[in-house]
Image 1 (tube, rainbow, N blue to C red):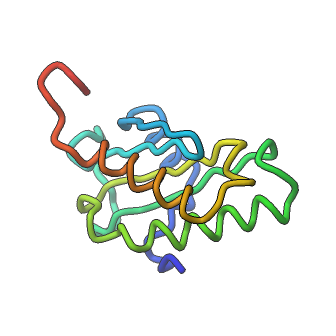
Image 2: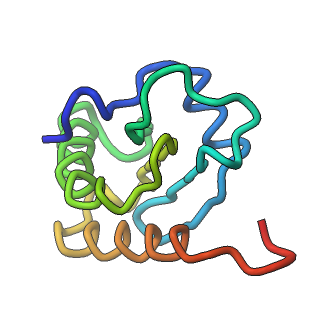
Image 3: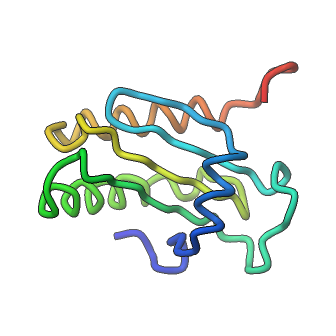
Length: 125
């Protein structure tokens, strides 16, 4: 499981990451990453990256949504060391995530993170 100290819980952190962060979309997930240097207001807490999950009703019933959320938390845990210090990461599950296999979710998440963690080219956000 994802350590509780890395979980995003405040609505304003979710909103900030989704609105101001860089985005990478894949068939099963959309990932938003806001680096500390991109944020206008610095995190008042420590330097740990915070991760939040959005799994809407269109993914499935409560059992399916909770299963998808648990699977995503498990997958993100392996990538915590790659995240910049103080960053905010939001992983949003698309409707297809409810029926996706574990390896498909893992591949989509890794691909999206790879894209977001690449150095940004000039002229791109």
